[in-house]
Amino acid sequence: MQTAQLAATGLTNKQIAAQLFLSPRTVAAHLRNAFPKLNVTSRAGLRDAPTGLTSQAPDRTG
Figure 1 (cartoon, rainbow, N blue to C red):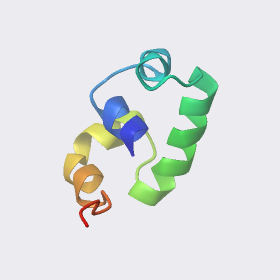
Figure 2 (tube, rainbow, N blue to C red):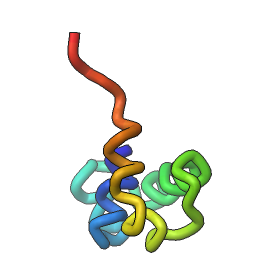
Figure 3 (cartoon, rainbow, N blue to C red):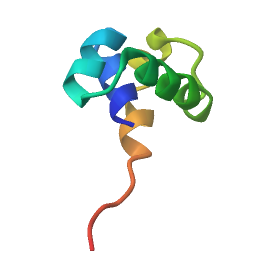
Figure 4 (cartoon, one colour):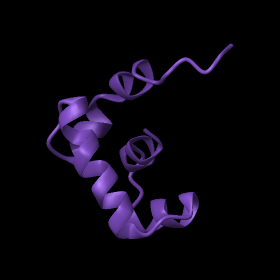
């Protein structure tokens, strides 16, 4: 979820990896897995569907 949200803001895989303490290849793998779940085919699709990113966040309360 975090990788998709950061990618939607326009960050590169390398920049996302640095923020999340992951490798850029791991970021790419997370995005590859997230695209079908979010029904998008590109990073531009992530930007065009910001509500899809926030509405699918799990409820972490109690």
